[in-house]
Image (cartoon, rainbow, N blue to C red):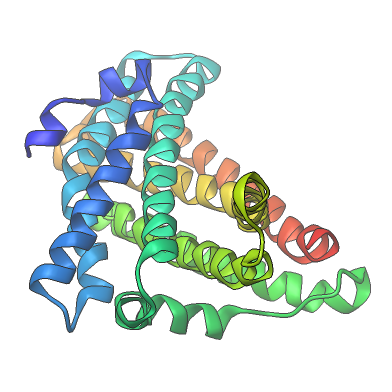
Length: 283
């Protein structure tokens, strides 16, 4: 597409922060089109439109990273190269998330009820109240970790089957996280309604910062884990499509993918720990 042609993976690795603005634009255009054309199904359509916009650059990234497996022998150097892709993909995700937050905060309530309907339902289903007690919350920690493993499995399978399919899982998560942050901000803004001038302005940004921090604390490592898993599945998918499974370097590709998966599991453990034991103590 037109916007994608302005930024390819090689350029993105050099200036990863540009992906933030690209993600914000992609999801904003998706929301506008959904509200304009598909008013009754806009809650899901906006996710699909965002995914469609991201597919070209994400798939080209998978191809680029799989190509690195064929020419780079040292694992540390290879992981360092993969991290470049992870960084700009995280910026893409953050841009998409902030776009959903912005639209949620500023759109009128009558539009929000339909636009973010599926996301709000999801939040209500997965919203667990935790206290931070290590012994009492261990079953919840296990449940959250296993649920994250399930999402990771879907991300890997989607990436393996569709090449860049993991972007759907990640975009959906961005919409849910964006909705949660936006709802947190709107709910707390009522406390500062009586403030005026600069005081009101600073209070507003205080609420925004708390909302972002509350969900980013465990959300960021969780999403990074999904990116590593999606990258692993995408690399295998590209290797099979391009016939590189016949290459003598395929064993090296498999070893690289296994390392990416181990890193992914590690991030999920950290994310689950933060969600159950740290976030409830701070907020």
